[in-house]
Image 1 (tube, rainbow, N blue to C red):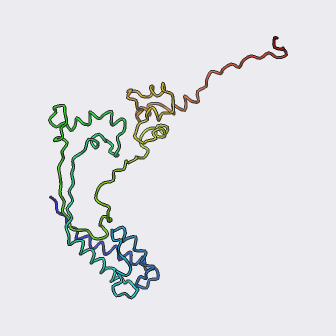
Image 2 (cartoon, rainbow, N blue to C red; image 1 turned 120 degrees about the horizontal axis):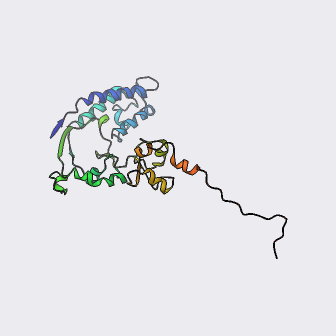
Image 3 (tube, rainbow, N blue to C red; image 1 turned 180 degrees about the vertical axis):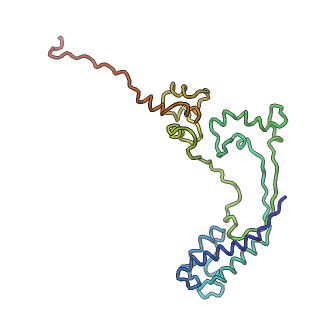
Length: 249
């Protein structure tokens, strides 16, 4: 169990909205009208305070929001949030998918599947040749913290779960032709991605695992697929024709 204090964030929260007030005060008359106040709505929404309106912050209902009124509203919200305690439960164990995903980019490539047995062997703690559910269990951690002020709060409905979308990495190692053929950005070129012939693919695939790695591609100068396509072919002779002679009848 770990306890975290967030009280120091209140000061930063005030400074942020104080700066945003000055930026939104277009005519520099030290108050915000409804049009100028609309510039703060994005900040309230990002902080999970979508219900905030001009009339709520304008406490004296004079159609002017002063800096004191804005900061009073922010302080009230921060005090309300910090009067509660958030408990966050996390687990550091890995699923089978996470063990196999060596990248980790939240997707399994063909090379990662080829090395699945090797990756799973690291989870075999008692070295008996099998992986049980007990060996896959990790540790649970509970973290207690005071509620966060608006600026540091997770947007409403956002939750604390991590994004599960696959991560497509940028072009990595290997020559240019290799990176262009690697359409799914998994660091290898499969037979389906390779633009040359099967015989050329098998020649480049030095270890015969069905994939051309960056190191295998770098061992070949130039673009072998382009060289193969551009190589001259033996011309096919045209059929002979007889001029000036009529065809036999």
